[in-house]
Image (cartoon, rainbow, N blue to C red):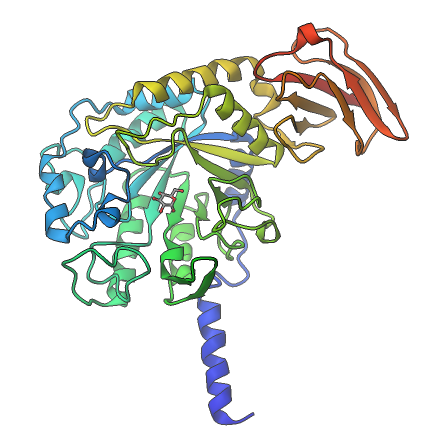
Length: 445
Ligand code: GLC
């Protein structure tokens, strides 16, 4: 091979290698245990909160309204969420049946919701509130036995050092051309803080990778930068071996990650068009994340709230794929959660009080869920979730094993069924159909 070409090849291979994360990553024993815990947990609370909440227009407001850096920097001076009560949030999550919380420690706007020594643009040094909300949340979570994860944005619309710039935030004025390596060092400093100053952390949830990819309106192209995942991931695993790493990059897992996430999508469905496709599903624990209305950060005018029935269906469908659901709230600038979302969360909690056994600690079921049916499995039991109350006679072609009995979950009422070479037919009396979800418990032989 000509020297020139081998150099090009070497460069391509090393750039590719740099994106691959930790070579031959072997998760520690603690990490494997944490994955197991994660898979049993099934339900978590996502929290998007930052100075953007003040504007009531979602967490992308800086980009969407092209707010110049010095203008946006006025927000912290009047961010004063006097009604914030960490224990209240944790109690809300717990009553909803959630087992963990993932909160934005720093979103794309570059504002840190924790006390960082890397700069003063943070909740303690730049707001009249002066309280480290992550610290208060960490303490409240510990007390309530809820695990705490930190969302961390790789993308930054404010930092000069986030250079080369990505695809978004290009209309934001007031940035200089800085130094990418300094940006990587900054992230390492912040991640070190997050993994040392807040006790035991559930994990880190990265986002923003896709900002550095070309996009032609239909699909993503090449990545422009080296995110130094190998070092970032190693740092996290060294500081807290049990902490789980996930990255919302919309591609197959990168070595060093411990769970895989699907944004606004059931695993592999890619209904958004920019999501993760089925062929990119790896072997890691899965997590679906979704909003209650259409917004992550507080959005005053977004009233497209999903009903608690829709949200329960989403939880059950996620579990049918063997996936967790991370359901989002965007607290208001005063630190309160909007009443519509409080109501949904408590309704889901009541439902889980009764039917949680068919969700927590289950594995993917025996069929691909749709709007009529979903299913989860635990040992020799299969839970058939009938999501459409009109659908009381069910025929399943591919039941992998013979069944021994069928009954209405939580009762001793037997359900009529017939299993033969063609498949399994189940007939549920109309009067027994539950408007939200009728659960049939099948016992396998
Ligand atoms: C997207 C958005 C971001 C949000 C995240 C949650 O990546 O950029 O605002 O935090 O999804 O899944």
